[in-house]
Image 1: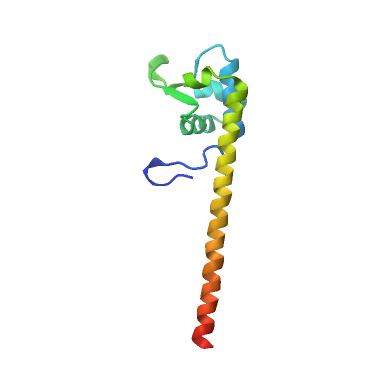
Image 2: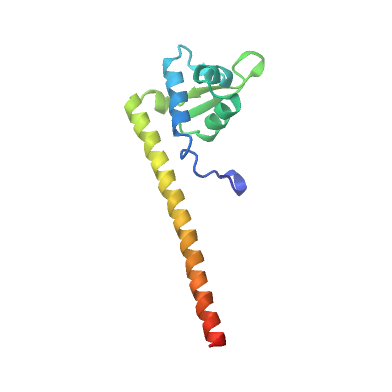
Length: 131
């Protein structure tokens, strides 16, 4: 979900498995920088999905502009992610996905609560008007 000014919410909620698959691809690859096509072929994902995941998670993946042949953008893992153990990174992604899920469900709950309260207040207002 994106809103104005480029803010993006719930980036990890339904993309956790894709993020972890791309992370594993970077770990198993002999190259430090990969093109989204290479990542997509390795994981069996569509290239546009790979690009969306890579660009929406700058905490993990870094865009390296103009390093490939003919100025093609490549992606790499951030140095802070590379030095960490894979279990720590997996726990980090899971924690962010859990946070997004809790935030989404609490937002849905608050919207439903506002609708119920507004409905009850409108019923009380109608009863006072006609009663």
